[in-house]
Image (cartoon, rainbow, N blue to C red; front, side):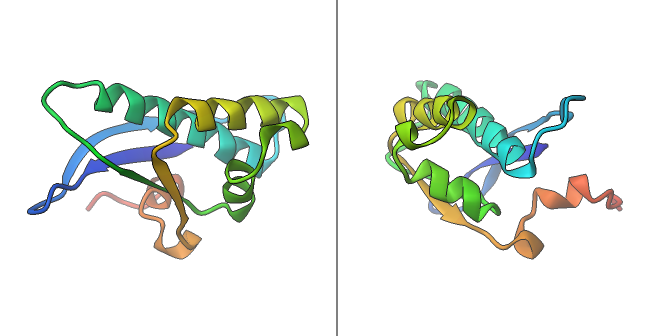
Length: 119
């Protein structure tokens, strides 16, 4: 799993942070892995927004998983514990984040997971 955070004031976009996580050895579905990545993203955004040098009024988060997007926009109690706990974390940690869908082919963070060269 790979995610990155960009800061975009009116004039330029700055790369802020990234995280790479190896999928667990235990078999887990791809939507659940994507949901774990969304939780990690919310955690990183929360730590960045606590910085006194940066004033942020709204946030945008993108996922290429329509399943995760549907989970995030639903009530947590509708799902089994694994999904419900992570949705609760996302919804309670940063309620100001606006979640959007990005097609997989246009998802810039997928380049790393596909083994592309940096050159």
